[in-house]
Image 1 (cartoon, rainbow, N blue to C red):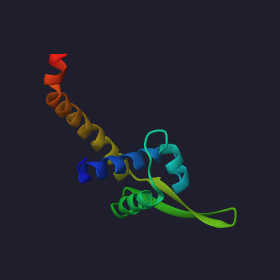
Image 2 (spheres, rainbow, N blue to C red):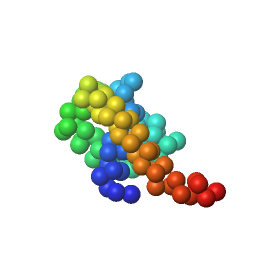
Image 3 (cartoon, rainbow, N blue to C red):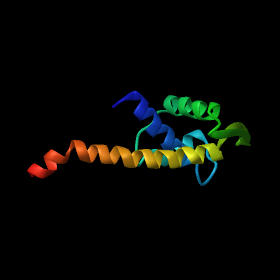
Image 4 (tube, helix red, strand yellow):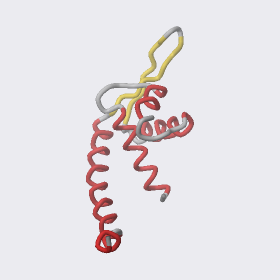
Length: 106
């Protein structure tokens, strides 16, 4: 899969994981696990990129004597999810075009 396409999909997945409630790294991985495997190193790279792009904010809060980072989606992040939904419809149309001969021959 094209790396840029995959990056965009993963970014949208992480944003979707926090769109209803603030969350932290381990919980995001756990929430995404039924749908895709994501390593901690990959997740934290994505979170940093999304923070830099102002699609999420980060706050630290103590939990069991340790600081835990919680991630909160911004309006820019919500807009990115909507943009992804529109883009994905286009990707589905392209996929249907590419596979139309296979469908017609069955």
